[in-house]
Length: 312
Image (cartoon, one colour):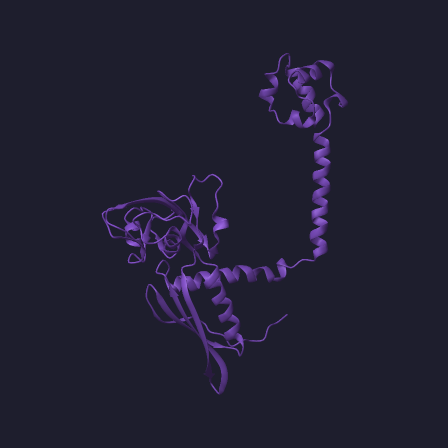
């Protein structure tokens, strides 16, 4: 069906942009399309972009998150809250996670910048952030795990059953977007003044450029909307029919593989050789290749030809 012409922009205008902030304009739009596009993009930007964050920490002398450490002002809970705010940027392509061992002594505080000195695959973007204050005589040792993720993960989702004793799992804020604002203004096209202009303001943590963040959010939306094209819409009954047909075929195959070899038309010699090798069903038989079968005691080429004809 033909679609009437829409008044739509032919490009996105970048008003200003740096590593952390960007302003973009999208115009002209049909009435109502400003809030439709703006709200969808804003939700994707805030919740669906990938980033890096601390997922767990193990601190020497602290067995759980409610512990206190002698000579350190903050308790472990406060230290964890501060670690959640550390922002990372990938330095080496393909490095999605890293375990960082931090050892600090002779300082009156631990900052995010100190953590950056012990990482190899990531750059700390807010090095001035104070993690904890401590006495210079204290030696602080901790092990951090930095991982890649999307949006926000509670501590329960970060848990690993194989983690070492004393590991404390943290909530992880992966999203690289700090703030997204959009505004809609009237825009004139020839004699009509009811068209709209969408203005986007994006603030990131510096791990992704605002322009790239906007492009990634648009790609995610496009991939979802593509499912609504005519080629991807099917009746629920068609999906069920395909599933039922697949299930019947699978069930028949499983029953066939459970068939006992004694119920098949095999010679006594071939059957005894297979029994001696603990091959009792058709499923057991097809798990061996020809060379493996010929290694069975008293199993020769004649028996192999017999089985090949049976399977065909």
